[in-house]
Image (cartoon, rainbow, N blue to C red; front, side, top):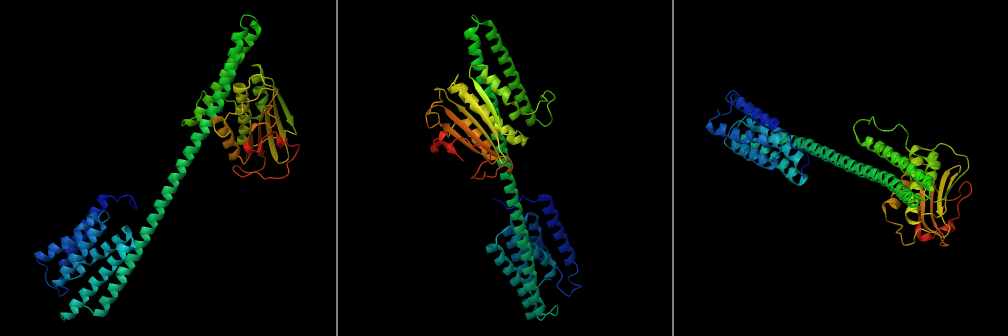
Length: 410
């Protein structure tokens, strides 16, 4: 995997051409600097050393080898070193910025030795172009500084890429979470309303001839339930579009304030449901409000599916710190024990909702075998995702013995 996106080939091409042109222009001043005049061999070496810079970021090792080897031959033949010195420095920086230290450090050392060799050859040939000490200083300082900046560039690139990968992973998690949220909403809306429609249509068909009034009431309930389901689906789908859907209903998402409608709709199908509110109702966060409503909705849907007609009780209890919701059915008609408590989209959705808002949910058959119970506990003051505190609860708490420990979920 590359450390960075490839640089523009045009930028590298322009840089390589510019460096080659600059080296050719400098070569014209060789005689004025008391160096040998460049000949065709020298010009060929200039091209070998400078022109490969057009692909320096794509092949940093090959470009470095060409630059250093060409520079060494150029210096050995006695030409002016300054003409090709810039290319060797750029190749050293590129190598450090594109390759790890185990490759770039020896490269920087080779650059230093090449520069030192150039100064030593000039000294042995009796030249007066500069002292050996100055060449040694340049051979130490220039490659070290360029390697350092190249290594910093590489490190910055690695950090940038790591940050981009983290942001991409976070975006994937957010997409997955949003898909899960939409799936939960779709399941809750479709499962509940279809269960009600199924029960009501069965009732209407059963009493169609013997009790037309009851059949007509059942059909009215089916119509109202279908309309409500379409409204919720349209509202949900409008969130997936770029702009608001003008057909989306203005009615807000359901919450605890609409539990009476939910209970009446279920009760109209022949499943008696009693709703009790304990404590002083007060506004809670919209997310927690929808969470509590969906848990009650899913619980009643399960009653309609697995224990139709069983007396069911919904208790909403407001404490100082906690909101507790109990949904219990009994009367000898229980949701079968063999229903998996850890699988199923509805049960998973309830647990995910409770976890999101720092709550706890207990799901399972009662110990006495008479019915099924769902208990949701949400902290009214905790932030979403914070684990609920254990210990004293405000207000009367439901009897924990109604659920076997094996099915309690924290």
